[in-house]
Image (cartoon, rainbow, N blue to C red; front, top):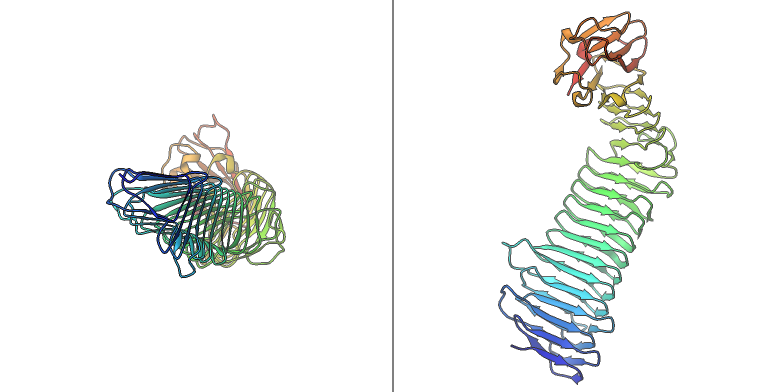
Length: 467
C-alpha cells in the first residue's frame, strides 16, 4: 500500500498503486522539478486508485499527475490546482494505458503549457467502458486543453472553462459525447475523430468545430457557436433551433439533416451527399427555394442554403420549391405550396389542403394517411419523362388491401364518386378529375377526396402505387 496524505509542503513526488488512496489537503503543496508530482503505476485489476487534490500540485519539467496502466479516479477540489510549467511538452494530467474506466472530476484548475488533460492508450478492448471528464472549473492547455486519444468511448461534461490557443478538445476516440453548459475555446474548439460522436451545447463554443467521420449529432439549441461547424462524413444531424451560429454549418459527405434558428441569418451547406435535408419543424411558416428562384422568407429569411435535396416544412403555410435534383419536399400542418423541379421528386403535403406541383420528371405525390388527403395536384403527368404516381401508404388508409398495383376490381372511373361493389376502393370522378377513396365500397362510410387533379390529367389505376 502506498496511501498518502500531504497537508504541508513537500518537494518529493508521491506514488499510488492499485487500491491506494492519496489526498493533498487544502494546505498541502507538492512542488517537484523533473519528476511527476503524483505517479500512479501498477497492473490493471478490478479496482482503481483514488486521488483527491484540495491543495496544489506544481511541477517543473514534468507532469503534475501521471497515471500508467491503472484506473485513476481523480478529484480536484474548488481550491485545488494541478499545474505543469514544463515548456518542452507533457501534460498537467496524463492517463496512459488504463482500461477505460478512469475518471476526472475537476472543480479547480488544471493547467499546462502543452496538454491540460491527456488520455491515451486505453487497453481493455473486451470491455464496453468509457473515460469520463466532468469539469466545473478551469482546464487550460497550450496545445490542447483536453485530449482523448484512446480506443474507447469518452464522455466530457463541462460547465466550466476548457480553453487552449490551439485546440480546446481533441476527441480522437471511437466515440465521444460532449455536453457543454460552460465555455469551450480554441482556434479549433472541438476536433472529433471517427465514430458516432454527440455534442450537446447549451453554453458557448468559440472556434471551429469538426465532428469527424461517423453518424454524428450536434444539438446546440439555446447555445452559441462562434465559428464554423464541419459535420464531416457520415449521416449527421445538426439542430440549431434557438441558437446562435456565426459561421457556416457544412454537412460534408453523407445524408445530413440540418435545422436552424428561424430568427437568425444562417449559412448551411449540405455537402456532397445526395439526401441532405433542411428542417423547419417546429417553427413559423417558411418560404424556401432550393433553386434560388424566389427569395427565402419566413423562417428562412436571410439564410443561404446550398447542397440540399430535401426540405421538411413547418406546421404552417409553407412555400417550398425544389431544383433539378430528386427532391423530397414535405409540408406540415398548414396549407402548403410544394413545387418540384426537373428531377424525380416526392411531394408530401401532410395535413392541410395543399397545392402540389411536381414539375418535370417522374414524380410521386405521397399520402401517408386519410388525414393527409384533399390536396390539389396541378400538373399530374402521364408521359415519357413525366410519368407521375399517387403513392398510398396502406397502413394509414385501411380498406383491407396490400401493396403493389391497384387491381382492376378496386378501381372505377365514372361520372360520380359512388362505389358500385364491396371491392371498390378508388374512384376517379371523370367530370372534375378528382380521385376518391372508399374504405368499404358499400357507401356505409363516405368516400374521401384524395386529390384534385388538373382538368386535363390523364389518369388510370396504374397511376396509383400502394406501399
